Image (cartoon, rainbow, N blue to C red):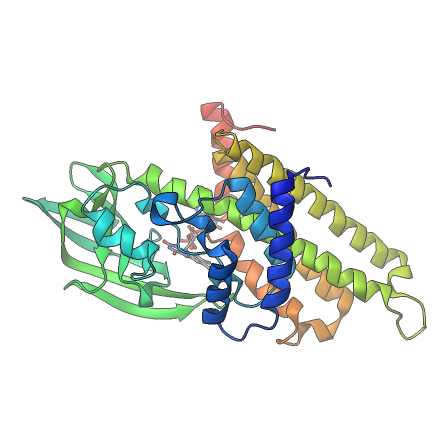
Amino acid sequence: MPESISPDLQALRARCEAFAGRLRQAGSAAEVRQAAKDEGLFYMTQPRDFGGTQASPLALTVARETLSRYNPPFLETVFGPSPGVLGGVDEPLRSSHLQPLMAGEKRGSFGFTEPDNAAQPTSAAVDNGTLIINGQKNYVTGGADADFINTLVHIEDLGPSMVVVDTNLPGVKLEQKFASLDGSHHAAFTFTNVQVPRSHIIGEAGKGLPRAMRQIGDTRLLFAAQASGYMLWVLDFLYNHLSAADRSGEPRGNKDVVRWHYAEQRIQAYAARSMLYRTARLADSGENIVNEAMACKVFATEAVGRMVDTAIQLVGGGALVDTHPLAALYRKVRAWRLAEGASDVLRLNIGRGILELGKGRI
Ligand SMILES: Cc1cc2nc3c(=O)[nH]c(=O)nc-3n(C[C@H](O)[C@H](O)[C@H](O)COP(=O)(O)OP(=O)(O)OC[C@H]3O[C@@H](n4cnc5c(N)ncnc54)[C@H](O)[C@@H]3O)c2cc1C
């Protein structure tokens, strides 16, 4: 196979295929979560010292791509919470937030994006051992149900830092709950003189941006793996559609223009998967993949968007009925060109990486 994976990873792929088949009958997120725990997939994203199996980037790529290929329901609940920016934190945050997060007793969220018209970035003054935080975050996924927000805060004299802000603190206000086109749920918060102990700074003060960007970087490869899996689902779906006869009795795929589009989709999927597996392998060998993960995310999320759009065109109006799987996928994948870094901004970062820092592979 083109991605030449080891026998262990081939076995993982087979397990994921069988699991995805079982998921089709799943009736609830809770049922899927329990099944994922029984199968061991749930623990792949969790560190060993919290009872997880801490799978490598390549193994996670194989698992996520394979599951997405079958487009099962409640896919987002298969993998357990990963530490994210809390990875490797010391006490007291390890016991107060990381441990309960890993045990599923607390829910975390990520507060990075701010409204365009914010007067100033979310900031904190320091009063003895206390941070006094003021500001706003307007796109916190899962924020309405979260116990805490890992928040990017500009701390006076120290610089941008990631800080754990509990959502039940006085001064934390949930301003708005909303859903995006893909069906995921988010919240907007304001912080008014929120008092947080200095010990809630995650890692080194002033080093919040690289920590946040590391989490976002890890997520980018994940997006590319999912996008790649959904491309395979579209190809399978269209294969069946194009192999069936239309009103003339001829297979739909006999028309040159239809065949051309399908071939183009296969080229896109081949390119996306080649990039993805090469990058996941580089990550497994400990290489820095910041630029390559951005390239994979931009390419795969844009390619899957075009593929789903073309697939709808080839299938016709029936694919626009809002319960049709292609309509649902159209809504799902659109968000990925903005979430975890807008495509335009990532392109600029890749340009900066090579022109100013001499970084990035071809
Ligand atoms: C489903 C989903 C989940 C999300 N979850 C979270 C979350 O949990 N936490 C969180 O903090 N955020 C989250 N976000 C927000 C997401 O990170 C932002 O939408 C994204 O980073 C883009 O920022 P923005 O929306 O402010 O748009 P802007 O930054 O205003 O960008 C809009 C457009 O402006 C242009 N642009 C912007 N900056 C530049 C630049 N420097 N150079 C050139 N062009 C530029 C680009 O064309 C860009 O596409 C989520 C978004 C989505 C869609």
